[in-house]
Length: 468
Image (tube, rainbow, N blue to C red; front, side):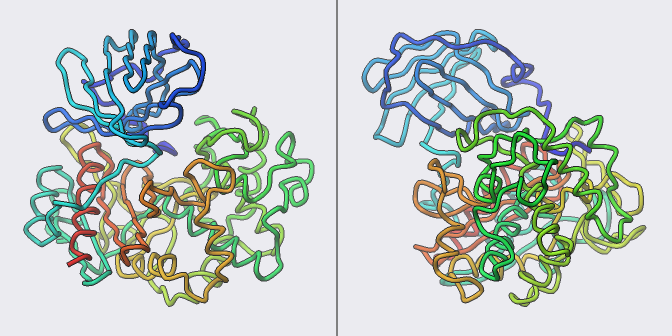
């Protein structure tokens, strides 16, 4: 299992993610298009999330579901509110026009023209306006359309509900239930950030505590990075350590993961920076492993023990655990699945099996819990409960260095906070819309592109249900 989503979709943008080069532009000065934009390209049953990054005279296209490699624009033309791009590496072009300061409407052509709109920021705006509220029948249709073994969703707002459809294992007879446990992947990151906030309030660490202060010589060139840098992906760390080393770490069986986590953090800190400190958002699992190792050194306790004692227990969350949910040799919880075309191959639970990332990556993405407990966690962020002070909640929900990535959360243009997560055999999304009084979540037990799109649909349908 890889440590991050590495889809290899045939068809749209296939083979283009590793293209190299630089784009050129007819205009070097800042334009209304400057910044990061995100949209969804849909062709038949295929759906890809795309990101457009405009930086000065350089424009890049990123396929988020195909490894997040950068595809440079070979030609760029910007005239007022219009943009025209050519991507020679994938034999495609894009023509768009600003609808307003935060929205581009346009057409992507790769053989055939397809509508492609972008909104400013790193999250696709999925408005629930006109979205059908989630029902049993609606969830069944979403799941069967995607071909995923199971999908669950839950919401809380004006109304509350939990639904699940499908089977715990592809081809199996055990139906999934609303009380089952789901793997949340990188949604764990906001939990680790919330844990750090608790430790800041207790005086165990400070937001500005540096890697060098706690990890000494292991910090290397990252000695001045602090918790705010690490938790907002602004430390300049590589996304992950090399695969050749990644697979050397234990995926189960450790009574205490601290030794391996510190070793993993040391390897992460030995990598070359992807950019200057606080200079750019570079999504990094490594950063969260380093943050986890830091709080372990500061407290003398493991991240697993700390997050149970400082976060889950105070919130009354009882189903939370780490790694793949369920009992070895049984199908008493949903299993993750590896997507291979239209097939879904179960990832059984048991020692030595590839069903999750190494234990060292706990702070970056190994939490599982039930839908009901996830709503409890999300509601604490929505309501800004007395788990934390108002100042700490604000710190967690505010990008510390600009942009739209806060501490484990992406801030949407509408002010709601969102995140997704996947260990390559599960995929989930969560949304906290404090202005609307809504929290909602959805998860599927595989990570195929169709499942990702289906989970996004279920999430927004859950939001619509919460408003009724």
